[in-house]
Length: 162
Image (cartoon, rainbow, N blue to C red; front, side, top):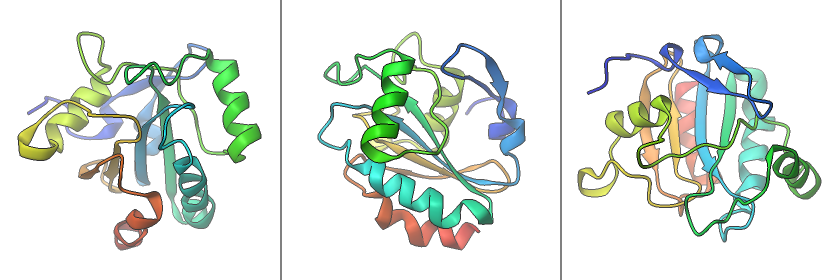
């Protein structure tokens, strides 16, 4: 298990490279997702945005981390990714800097989430784009969802935490 106890113990980088504390997310229900613009699951941006718009006023946020580790399906720079997400899916939830979710350069937040909620058969690695982690108001990882789990299928779990 990781030393860090909640999401508030971590930082993340914005697309401009500025590092921000995730402590300001304390008290919110979060869905953290590794995303890609050229993936078969990319249309899930629609479902993620729908959840964000439906529950955002109740203390729910989606935080997207673009990642290019799976089939090179996120080749763009921060500006290109943001533009694609806005123009194609009207995304209004936060897009963070592009990261690695597996390997030596995995950011600490993802190491922690993978330890807290392993995948199938205890696997720690992220298998593909659009793997999702649900985090409760106390900043604890509640559940990990596979890329094939559609955002609308997670709605009941989110409402339980709100």
